[in-house]
Length: 105
Image 1 (cartoon, helix red, strand yellow):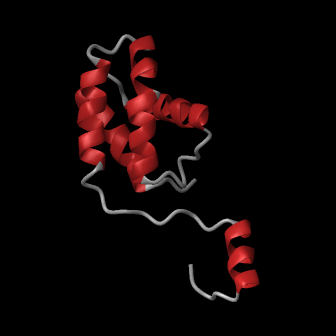
Image 2: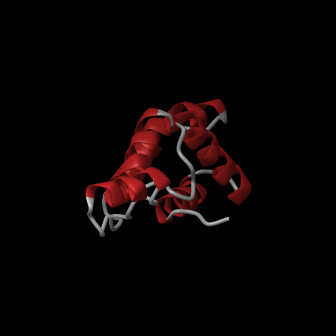
Image 3: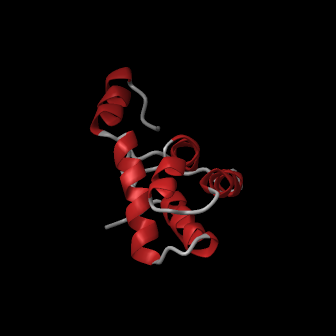
């Protein structure tokens, strides 16, 4: 399964900043994304920053992670330095462009 750079970035940072191992960090971030209705394969840095700021602190606290708000602030700051990723093209966006006569996203 393909994953967005922002997803991988947050998971790896959680491993460094907490006592979580790789499966715990990835599972926690996936649960936060699921609550937001966002897929790990297509999450942009901006979307991930919102999830990190709004949802992830509670997920970390539920797992006994100390200072979840401080960790999430650090994650948000690091996400702002990632290059922008293009959102995945949906069938609706492709057909919308075709209907309008535009050929590029």
